[in-house]
Structure formats: structure tokens, C-alpha cells
Length: 186
Length: 242
Ligand SMILES: [Fe+3]
Image 1 (cartoon, chains in turn yellow, blue):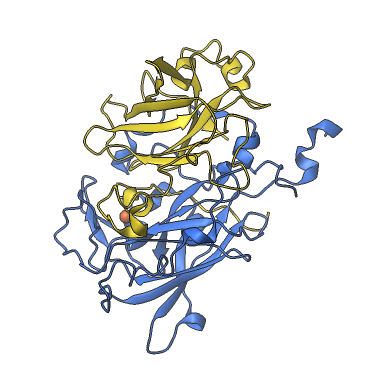
Image 2 (tube, rainbow over the protein chains, first blue to last red; image 1 turned 180 degrees about the vertical axis):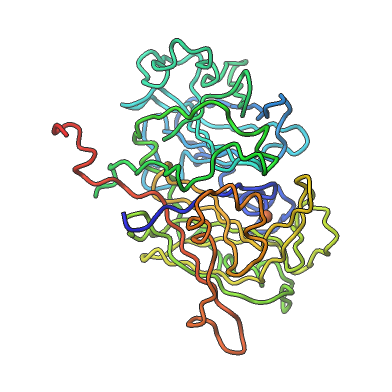
């Protein structure tokens, strides 16, 4: 290796200026379109679902300045079909409530994993972006290597979004403490 | 090396740990459990791809991209340029870089920034670009001011520009900050000092680049960003018995 990798630094409290400028109040930047608002082009085939949740800190308080990114396969199990950004989305959590909402389609399982959405969390106080995965409580996961490895762990449930209503799933992220989410070294 | 080869691991001797008590915000936001190591699959080896049609002509010019017609942002005009590479020194082409910063007085255009330095009506503070085939990128901006921040003491951030970097795979995703050569706040800043390795800090510090500084116009600063590289064939080809 001839070049050492660059060190990460926190995204800070103003990450939204750079990544979701409309949400930060810079309404006309980039024609008013924040990147990653739509995860797939309209009419992409698949079962429509809505994922929502909050991010919590070690005191159990909501985090109001986090940014989340999502990366998932489509309903046929492909990532980034045709060299696109399809399957990628980004959300600033709501600055008043700390919640996020993502309308997407249910990803298919792939050869290496059960159906899941990859999640990346950055915020003030997070020095190195945190990777985790969101599985679905009504999709099969018995053969998934991560879920298998977590079989005996009380923290396994932190990786699983809970069905709520017709289309909805709830997925909260706990950065620290009793309910701490399983974060991944990928 | 094919696109299917896994990325080198995060080098934890160069990366900041999660819990860094001197940076107070990390205390309640640092996971206390070890990260769970997972093999990279198709979703880690690929990532979103962005096209040149996304990028407007002034997207990488923060002096002009928020300014009224005929106006410009106030401050020292600079050009920041460099290469996005991987650890194997290969260019990372057509990768999206996004950047954001405070204005010349150290004030962010953000509801939550109440610092007394005034907003500049002609400065938004964000930009973006795609790297070219050699991984090269450049941006024009005004040099950001240092600013005070609440961390329990008399804390000032060194002047800095935040960078968000997409590579070719999800595992390469990185957000970091660029500092300026000679800034006396670098060794005093608890956020910079979350990085234990002084050379790693030096690599986040842009150098004055007189070769690209344009007389009577603007100064240039050189800043390279290095993402995780892909492992060699020999290393990962488990199927053939390594
Ligand atoms: Fe900052």
C-alpha cells in the first residue's frame, strides 16, 4: 500500500449544509433538489414500504442533528442497477423531533444476505461513520450470516425493523447503552 | 483488480476511536460495544454512481454559487485542489465530493449557528464536484474563518472545510475535514486530536501550493484524499486455497 487512508472526522452539527442544503435552509441550492430524496426512480417494481424511526444517544435522548444514508438492493437483488444511484438515499433527521422517514421498496435477498437495507449514521460526536443493517421482522433471516452470528445475543433485535401497519416498518438506532444497536466493521 | 475484490479494512491506527472524552459530544454518542466484523458482499463492494449531468457549472465555486448576479462572497479567495486516490495510489474517478464550510467570519448558514459573526448574503457555504478520470478535483471558495464552539472551555475550531466522499463501494464512504497549513488551532482542537497519529493529521492539512497560485488573483492549496483500496488477488482468493 503506497498511500495511507485518510482519517475520518466528525460530520459535525452542520452536515446538512453540505449534504441536504434544502433541509438546512439553502432552498435554492442545486435547484432545490437535495440529493438522495428519492431512493429509486418512480415506478421501480417492488412492494412499497415506509421505514421510519429515530436515533437515540446513550442517555436515551433523541439525536436532532444526525444524517442517515441508506443503500439497498432492488426487488430483484441488484445493487445500483445499470450503474446508477438507485437504491441509495439520504435523510437528515427532523431537527424538531429527531425522526426520519424513508419511502422505498422491499429489497430482495442476495446470495450473501437476507433482505436488508444498509444504514450509515453520521452526526456531531460520531468520529467515524457507523454502519449497520436493517432487516425485516416478517422476512426470512435464518440463513443470514450476521443474524446467525447474533442468534444468542440480546442485541440481535436491534438489527430488525418491526412491521407496523400495511406498509410501515419502525427502525430506531441507539448509539450507546442498554439498547445499543449492533454496528458493523465492513 | 476487479470490482469484486474486497476493500482493505479500516486502519484503526489511523482512524479516530469512537469515544474521545476531550471531544464532549462523543461521550453519549460513541458505541461502547465492539464493531461486529462482517465479510463484504455485493452491497459493500458497490456504491451509488453519480453522473456528470448532476453537476451544475458553479457547483464547485462557493464564491459564486450562492451570490447575487454580479456579486461575490466576501473573503480571501482560494482554490483547493487535489486527487481522490485509494491506498494503492489508484485514482478514484467519477466520484462525488461534497464540501461545506463557515464563511470568512467563521459563521455557518444554518439555523443552529448563532455565532455573532455576520452572515454573508452572497455565501451559502456548500458545493460539490465529480472527480475526473485521474481522480482530480478542484473548488474555488473563500478561506473559512475559525469559530468558537461549546465544548466546556475556550474552544476554537481551526479553519476547515468539511468533505463528504463517495468512492466506488459502500465500504469506502468517508466524511472528513481539511485544515490549513500553519493554523495554530490544529494542535489545540479536541476534534482534530481525536486522531492519535500526527502524520494522519498532517495528511488532512492542505499545503500552500505556490505552483498553482495565480498572481494577483488567488492562492492555491493542495489536498489529497485517500480511500480504502481493494485487496490484491492473492490475499482474498479463498476458493483457491489461500
Ligand atoms: Fe465545521
